[in-house]
Each structure stands twice: as C-alpha cells, then as structure tokens.
Length: 262
Image (cartoon, rainbow, N blue to C red):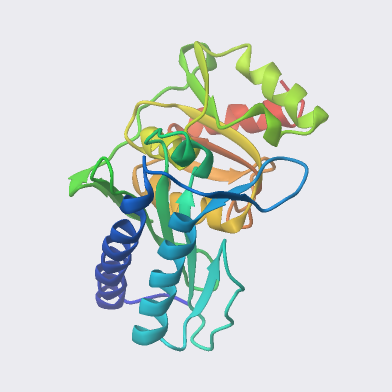
C-alpha cells in the first residue's frame, strides 16, 4: 500500500499525539519508587506500570481515531485490523535503563502499511527529544538528521545493547567486527539508533529483536541516509538479527563480515 503524502502527514500528526500522551503516562514513573515485574524467560525481562500505562493510552487513542487499523504492541495482545495498516508500539524500549534511572530509553511508534514501516517516532519525554522519520527524511525536534560518512571499520564507532542478546555463533561474528572498529560501546537500546541517525554512531549490530523493537527506528535511520537490514541483507522489520549503518558502503562491508566472507 502506498500512502499519499497528505495521508502520511495526517498519520504523522497523529503519531505526535500518541507520543505526547504516552510521555505523560510514563514520566510519573521515571526515577520514582517503582514495582518491577519479570515477564520470565532465560533472561530478566522487566515490565513496569509505566510500560503498561503508556501502551494502554496509545491503544485507546488508536482505537478511537482509526478503529480499522491493526495494533502490534509489546505488552498486550495484537489486534488484527481491516485497513491494511498496523501501528507497532513499544511503550518503553530500554526498560532496564528506565528502572535504573538512566535516560537511555524511549517510546517507539511505527506505522506499517502492510509492506514496510512508513513512519517512525522515538520519543524521549524526559530529555524532551523526539526523533521522527519517513523513508525520505528524518528530524529531531524539527531539525534535519543526517548520518555521517564512514566507509572504514577502522574509523567506526560500533554499538550493541548487551552481549546477552547473541548466541555463541552470533557473538563470535560480532567480536570479529568489533575487533576492527575504533570504538565499541555496550548499551543504548533505541537511543543508540537515534545517535546513528544523528551522525554520532556508525554501526549497530544486534540480535534477538522483536518487530516492535525495530520498526519505528527503520524510517528514522533510512530517512537520515542510513541503512538497516537483517544480517543477511533482508528486511529488518521482523526483528531477529539486525544491522544498521550510517554509511551504505560500510553496511555492505559489515554484511560480508557477518557472512564470514571477510
């Protein structure tokens, strides 16, 4: 489905409304006494009242304004729509940072047209930064974003959220690339991707991601001139192993290394 420009603008305006509402729902819980639940699994997977409240208010707004659109969110069951459009929501991406008082988290809001995410928002209400992207452009608080050119790994800054997201083979591939970079940093969650779109990070290599972890970030990175794919060069929208680069030439090099060709 190809959205006309006026419809895309309409949905962007609505995405800002979702960001405003979710931010108001989240902020009372940040750096405040907070109960944390573990959703279970091999690793600690926290969820807070801030996560739940933010997703709830966004779902309510979507269902009131666009009742025929689908909704895919982290904290509640998926809603199948009939319009061909799906809102993809992660109320707090970076909950581990959130519960430790670090501002390296954000609310992710994407609209998928049935083929790909066509708009994305990363809202950080505490720092008052809002990153917005379409496939043609990206902005932070209205200022245009541009990735930086960096065609050499030896000059690159690499980020990933945690080593725990990789299996043994993935970690070995990651380490081969990390050993060739100028700087490697752990942490960041969605914030790292926005720093890549802003020109401060060159490569992000991650794994074990969900669709709601990545879909809002894809238009931001691509709109800023970067590339975001699976490790094999396919679409990143389904999550799993994902690689993002600010420079398309560097992205091609990283894909070869991930495939064991370098």
